[in-house]
Length: 165
Image (cartoon, rainbow, N blue to C red; front, side, top):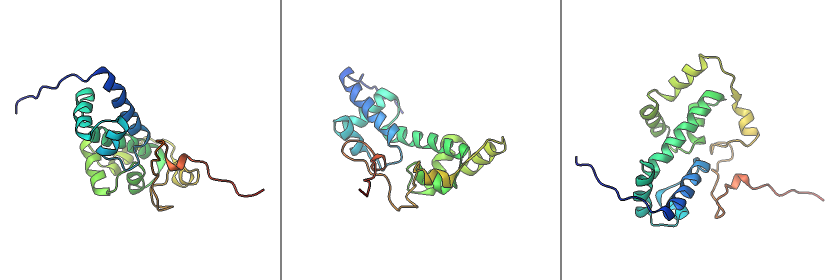
């Protein structure tokens, strides 16, 4: 297969690509697709995909998947959550796709990864505490996933209205 030549990305576009990449880093657990990411960058989805890959060496969706798997590794090492809870907490809708992507990128299944780290004896944060403090809600407790508002903040980051005098 011949190598494709990519044109360099314009400097003024890099700021917009960085904004979209930062958005993925902050909102990795939300349902993000190419059109939503391109709108954050302010360009068409096809132009966004080409320029993002030229600038960062991987497609936007591959970058997002990698970031989700990295976050899942953190949770598997430090939190007392099931693999299914970790899967939904980092934005995957399917346990099968999560497990296969995890194995592809890490080299072992999520359960094997957690067992290997547990053998080292690190302390785990109880999953109930994470849910209680609102650190994560993988769509299982409240039944909703955090929505990305127009302002770019998650619905979970909004403070609840207080009731009373």
